[in-house]
Amino acid sequence: MKFNLIKLNKANTAPFLMVGLIYVVLLGTPFIYFSILKGNAHTSVSAKIGDPAAIEAGNTGEEGSFVTTDENGRVSDEGFSAQTPINISNWKTNADSRGFIMLTRAAIFSSILAMGALGAAISLITRTKNNSMFTKDITIFEILSIQTVGAIFALILGFTFMGNLISGTLFPNPIIFYRIIYVPPAFAKLLVWSFIAGFSERFVPQLLNNLANKTKNESV
Image (cartoon, rainbow, N blue to C red; front, top):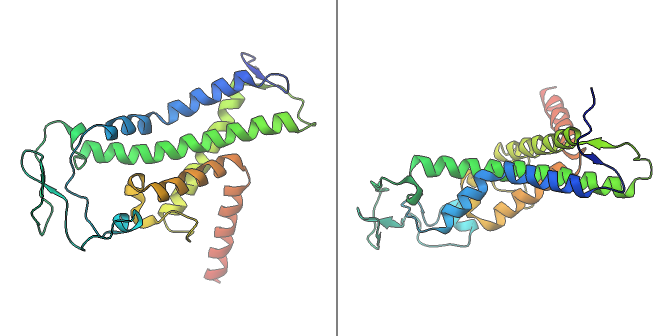
């Protein structure tokens, strides 16, 4: 049974663009929510100056010093040898609470999925407009499946960064992966590569094939 609720063809890409953007927003909901909370005032005791995240962000303060707060959540200039937990009932105002940390990680993977889906959407629209052999109509369910594949490819690429399977100045630093959202240069790299993973349908499969061949050669 073929569903024909919304079709994409050369003369009609607007419906697909709307569906694609809605799907991207849905995938990026945790990131959007995190961005809203991050824009509000919140406290943190885990901003260690001199750690990899701080260094990549351009903060080269004294190694081992901490940004600390007192029991009322006010920033303190006193030095501590260890992190001091804050007892704040509302997790939305405490960046070190379990809830905020989990939301941060969800926002990272959410942004990866959203950019992968967006890349797949842009790729499909481009091919529809430019490829003279592309004459078949595409239904809404096929559109969403193509975007889902792009999102999965982006997620797999994110895992390769996280596992340090590929490295270099062009790629995000795996050491700060769970804090990458606080480091604009590294986070921008992650988003761009996630978009590429969705945009180029052969990129991630070829990467996985290269990694498999490398592993096979090393085991011989």
